[in-house]
Amino acid sequence: MSNLEIWLIIIAGMVLTYMTRLSFTVLVPPERLPSTFIKGLIFIPPAVLAAIVLPELVLVEGEITISPANHELIAGTLAALVAWRLKNTWIAIATGMIAVWLLNSM
Amino acid sequence: MSTPTKHKPTLPRAEFQAGVRDQLPILLGVIPFGLIFGALAGSVGIPPLAAQGFSLFVFAGSSQFIAVGLIGEMAPAIVIIATIFVVNLRHALYSASMSPHFAPLRLPWKLSLSWLLTDEAFATASTRYSHGNTASAHWYTLGTGLALWTAWQVSTALGILLGGGIPATLPLAFAITLTFIALLIPTLVDRPTVIAAASAGIVAVILSGLPLRLGLLIGALVGVGIGVWVERKSSNVES
Image (cartoon, each protein chain N blue to C red):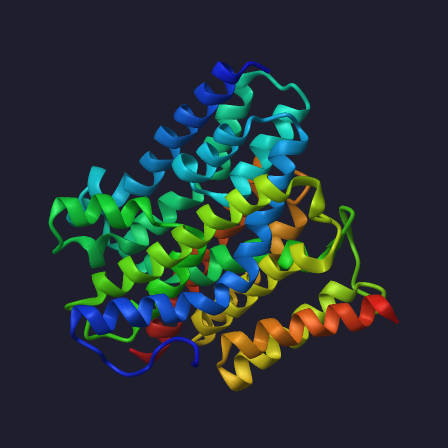
């Protein structure tokens, strides 16, 4: 692929991505949004983050794998418990990293 | 520090610093991700400046990975551009979620903060806004967004420079998943948010075979819809 084509991808990707980010903060003013839409806003963070996280944890090479062999699922669950109980991001991430490292080296 | 700052700073400077501070642990996951991105871009033959260009201008990690993968497979440019767009459509949800908070701001603020609206900055900023006292919270959002932006640029550059020296198979890649877990947990504040998250996650798993990460987008939309429905049902019971 030519350098020019790569830069075309970058510029088009930039414009389209920035449009999605501006869509409701600038392009469509919030006062024009229907009230059901407004009620949905508080569910966006938990819904999107869970939709990112759960497939990463549960799927191993595209297959649903809920077993002790799935080290990332165990480590991720542990990190979630720590984040929930201790409310500390540093400790939660460190716990998950150490757990997956230990499990992988066992 | 704890997740996320609980005290109520009102000075712009204190808000900005709190935003940076709350983003720091997240960078544990973001920096390896940036290093691997830079190395991967080089390995498929993308020139260093263009690799950095992805991080500077597109500034959306998962779409950058997918684009670089597609460039490696010699996919047509138009397909790659369409893929970047669809993968990044979830940012419209972030934009909608932030729109009431950004509404009182002047246009240059809206344009800048929207530019910085990544997964990670969105997650910390929305937790900040949920704590109220938001008169200066845009400084928090600026701080948290700039911290992430800086880390992403520097880690991409390092990844390009170090190239093949970075083993992509290390559990380093798992760190980004852990950061999203750490960001997810504080958003689960009541039964409707838990149900919204659970249904979004389950739908995303079931639909994970769809192309363009559509499973993520559909899962998120289903989760939001179910959250609204559960909340409406429970408020009907109360009234």
